[in-house]
Image (cartoon, rainbow, N blue to C red; front, side):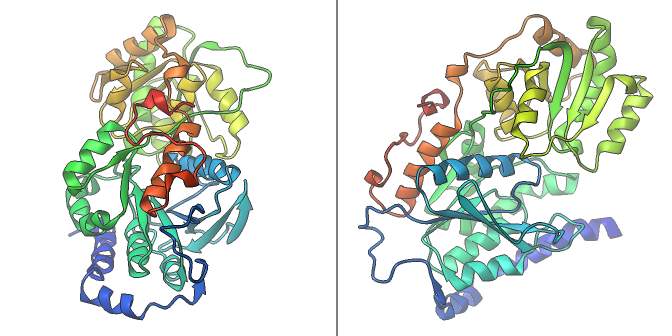
Length: 430
């Protein structure tokens, strides 16, 4: 085995050790875990209480880090806090440069060091210790990749704390990881089946994990809203925008590769890539080889600068997302909410957007000419949905409020509004 392969598979070795605690060792740890710091009022019958449960969200990363889960957590956490929910977000920091504790938008973010600094395993002993040494009322695990979700589920289970998990599944950064996904879901199966609720953000994700885990999965779609840009920018007819981390599986290179053919159809076309990541050099090199470097811009919009993201998307003649895998992309929902035409790859949860009539689609392995034709069609004859058909963050939070009460055996009367369990996306709008 080569050195790079050892590095990629090392995370699985750590994961196997963590999940091994699900046997006799975990039972012993569970028997000695003590509520050193109580967050549950002494003597309170949680099931009978009409009070909302205190929620602890656990996410591998949180803003200012870039990504769809990070955006989801920020959007739902601030709305839950505004509705009177008491919650905190536990997350990790590989750099040690971010604030360890931060209050933002009405909730608290607590960060714990994760290791190794240069890999995406996110092993965080401090996070596990935080879950073990303080009893919590309800834990909501955001995401299913990295070591954080199994550690969070394990910690909640050891403390006999009810927990739910939203999958937020994503693409793989290597072929080895992609092939290992089935094994990963089987390893996580015992902890996933112990969850009070499992949540998928698209019908695709619901079907995938019901089959993989053998447990029901509830649909709660992402919303997608940005502050209205003031003043509203003029649409640049030839501007094509692609958004996301600069990783190969995100498919930005497919947009670059299609640009020469698009220029034959739309001479004023140019491409703007909004994101940051390790694949930036390859994207710039590809643009140079194809002779379109002067038509390609790469820049990062800080995740918390929602106004600038709104201006950037509102100017686009078309937004594209040609990823290998997406469950329900927040960036696309934001573009649709602004009325921008979208082209996506016909794969994973992106296929669903085409079936709903929200976007044009192209095959994941479509030649550059086909991608260019689809983009040119959206530039010249846009296909966009009625914004009232789209799911919203308010509808997402409505559904989460019900899920929290269900997961903690609280009466649904503990929340002021509700969304039925399995409504289509359109009904998530209040």
